Amino acid sequence: GAVVSQHPSRVICKSGTSVKIECRSLDFQATTMFWYRQFPKQSLMLMATSNEGSKATYEQGVEKDKFLINHASLTLSTLTVTSAHPEDSSFYICSARVVTGVGEAFFGQGTRLTVV
Amino acid sequence: LAKTTQPISMDSYEGQEVNITCSHNNIATNDYITWYQQFPSQGPRFIIQGYKTKVTNEVASLFIPADRKSSTLSLPRVSLSDTAVYYCLVGDGGKLIFGQGTELSVKP
Image (tube, rainbow over the protein chains, first blue to last red):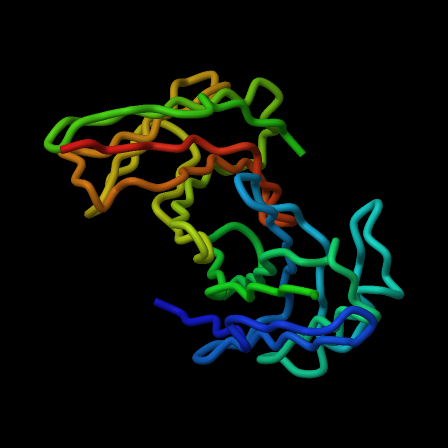
């Protein structure tokens, strides 16, 4: 099946710094990618939808100036957590579909962010 | 987007068949039903997708009644490695919104 790769898998940063997470579709082109956040023992929460070549669409309550999303190519989307604080510590997951419309969505392995 | 309701948790034993039911009373005509599996600290993994009646693949079956207001994921002869959270999603190809999921625990 198609592969979505996230990097890094784990990152620890100091409070106030920024962290960039990369999401790559390795063997297919992804017009649309999705970014999720998951806290312990909770479900995945959709943060934003990333479209190649255009601005991301953020879900209600997600600060677009804090969570910067860039989808510069059909195989790469990045999420930058700016001025990170301990409450931003979470598991971040990206996803992409092979084709537009219904069908299997592929997820990255996730990135564990810890802000100290 | 249609809201889904699943049991929060289920217990089973190795070798048993497990059925997880999901309610989606306001499913739309264009919506498909998709199930994902998630292990701790990993991204979700696609299990199966269907629109109506029954779909079967190498790992599971999906049963959807005629009114499509619910669906049942059937896992035959579960093993310890099937311990995970299972999510039922309903959508037409747009955003993937996850509900609470069902935490399945398989015991020896």
